[in-house]
Image (cartoon, rainbow over all chains, first blue to last red):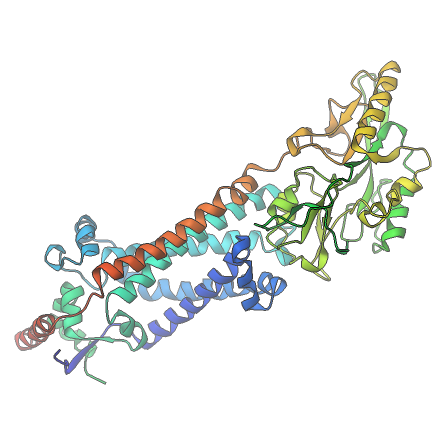
Length: 219
Length: 304
């Protein structure tokens, strides 16, 4: 394999730091949340120092996650605006899963799947945050009537389930598409990676003289 | 209550295994509260405080005999005073001893996520095993009677134990022992139901034609039952629910949602894994790199 001499910056340092704060918080939320959702997962509460600790720490991590995700929205909303080409991509989703490059239309900075992950989380995380506040026993246990709390806990669980499924898809895509992980850990991709997965973005980048700052020598 | 080597569990919260249940020949017990014989003396409330060593912080007078105002982590039973003006325009003072109903199908136990924090013994008593409680407040959402209260000091949930410690050694609950009029009776559920029947016949003969037993079947019956003079309108007694049942939201959350979500999550992970096994990693080829480099160079030349 040719070792490309030039690389392209895909994620800035602040985007990466933000993403990984998000990722750590989300993972901790999944582990602690599942331990309080299903008895076969209760052992996960040991990771947090027991049931009482899990119950106490889960909402606080949730607050950090909410703040962190607002940062994500600020940094990524523009790259995730939905365009007509995204509908075309959605129609070729079978080809994406099949890894049949020829039948996938050229993709900009993000493909429609990535955009869906972004917008789904943009909907789900605030939902989880708000319903989570309602069932935060220590501070808001008496703030709402019990029927409201019952609805909140059901919505909270459902939203969490959906978020976990999306999270699994997201993580798997990052593992399957080689060197995506490097984009989010070290920030850069090779021109070949951009050509293969985000061809339209690569062309836009190369054509735009203002975007030349994104093209660097390999670290 | 503490867990004294109980081998008579019929239900245990957040447990997928059968709990130790060999000692199951116990009779089902019940406390019968005959509201028509209650004089509102609060001896039961005092006895509960005394036996369980509970002391509620002294509050304020709120214009009612009801004192304290509500159940709390330190108030497990409470005389609730309701003033009701009947059809004849007469005042009826309806006094009901409130507290845990010890449901046969307990909503608190169903909602509890901490293994063994809520148990039900073979005699029907629903008990909180406090050292296993995590203080999440799910029991509050599960309960159809708004009974459990979470302490702000130790973040544990508390409620009436039906004096499970006394009952387990053959004594009646403290409130029963203290009641001076025999309004609170304790025994097997069969005996209490039969005794309630006699009381209802008596009440009906004295003009309370709607007298009846409160033993709501939607929660499988309760191990604390009331004889009410107005059994057709239990709400009169400080909001005793007419049709208590575990909320549909709680049933869904603790029923179908649990296995469905776990299977869904596992399936997503397994599908991902086997996709990788079948397709392998999505690698950038040498051809891709050459094409990528070409685009960068060409476009860079074309733009000033």
